[in-house]
Image (cartoon, rainbow, N blue to C red; front, side, top):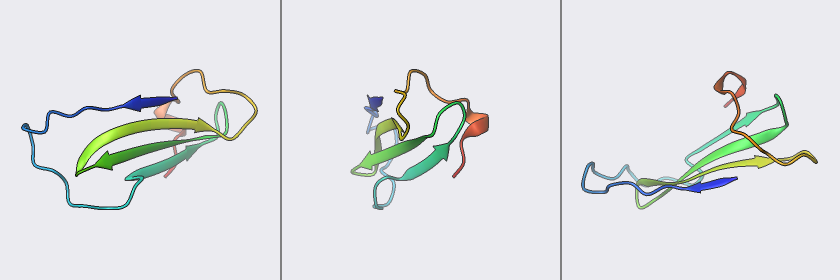
Length: 68
């Protein structure tokens, strides 16, 4: 499941350049999956959740289960 993000670039200066994903986290409940946040040009651009199990992701994870 991917969400493309569009940020109002006039509201804040861009963050310093860095590698993507900017954040990569993992969770195992209720499924084995990961969450990534990416940037483009110093602004948030993408939020993605992906499954490494046979079951597709149907809902965002409860933040209590996310591990970095």
